[in-house]
Image (cartoon, rainbow over all chains, first blue to last red; front, side, top):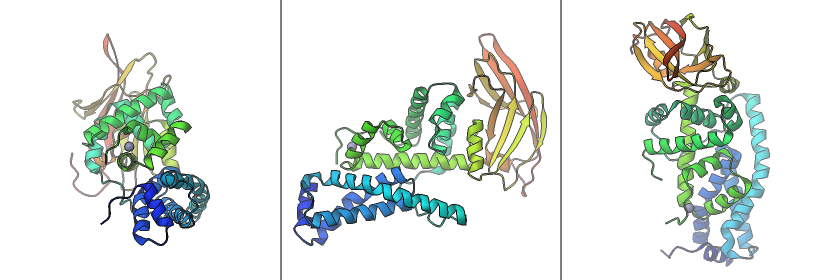
Amino acid sequence: MRKELSDGELAVQIGLGSDAEAEGELYRRMAPRIRLYGLRHLRDEQAAEDLTQQVLMKTLEALRAGRLQTPEKLASFVLGTCRISVLDLRRNTQRRERLLEKFGADLTAPAQAWLPPLDHDQLARCVQSLRERERSVVVMTFYDEQTGADVASFLGISEANVRVIRHRAIQQLRDCMGVAG
Amino acid sequence: MNCSEPFGAAVLGDYWLGVLGGGEEEVLEEHLFGCDECGARLREMIALADGVRNLAKEGCLRMVVSEAFLRRVEEEGLRVRQYTLPAGGEAQCTVTADDDLLIARLAADMSGARRVDLSIRDGDGVERLRLPDIPVRAGASSVVYQESMTFAKAAPDNEMIMRLMALDEAGERLLGEYVFHHTRSLPGPGGW
Ligand SMILES: [Zn+2]
């Protein structure tokens, strides 16, 4: 096996012509990052998967055609491609949501295999062991991810304070779950 | 692999919630496209957020929630069984297999209370559980308490007493007492 290529070397290698090994390495390296970006911006695993395929395809095309001016900036190029592609996919996701509303069934729920497993009962104990305000903040915030102002007015504190409580609670949950860092 | 400037869980959580400033978000995303160590930590964060969200949907946590939260839960199609009691009130209550969340709305005059505790007692008046310093919105006239569905679905016929207490230097003051006569409607023996 050859030594790990830098992003720049990888980009050059793919640009030189068909190199299945280098293209495989590009996929292995970039797919998880694109998927994560997609999940953050599209809030949908299937859409994140679509984004991953689309961005990798566009990246390969660009590399094969020698369109990447600075090969060392491969990661930035991939991120830039994500930012553009996510706009199209967001429209598709909305269409999917409308279909779901129309037909009622969730036909698109894929497995969450790439998220680390979490002990459900342990998490329940950890959440229950938080202080009352911390539990309210964490649960109401993560239940539907747009409740900053809402939670603040419920607790009668500023959004900045909600943030402080949320940070503290997240740290406590991580400690309680035995996650380092 | 060794990240020289790892992003902490708090920032990653904010990123996941979409509340980082635009500049901060861009810096973090550039970093995530070059650092799988922070990517792994973000995945842990998402798993944690997902896990908490699932717990909320299962209704298995004991906690005080907001009216806005309840509305959103109902909009999502979850079935909420609610009992609204005035101070000194009683209710015949149960829970069925179809219920997702179990809510007690306890009305009380909480004006001037700096700290409010919720005390949960058995039929003999013995305190079984206390939620200290619960969140109470200024000017609120009730507390919305979510009972654990896991607990309620397993509970036999019994009586439960809830008390809202105000606490200050002078000690404890009763704001309201609420009695729940629970009848089990699920099959099976039931047990605490
Ligand atoms: Zn890092």
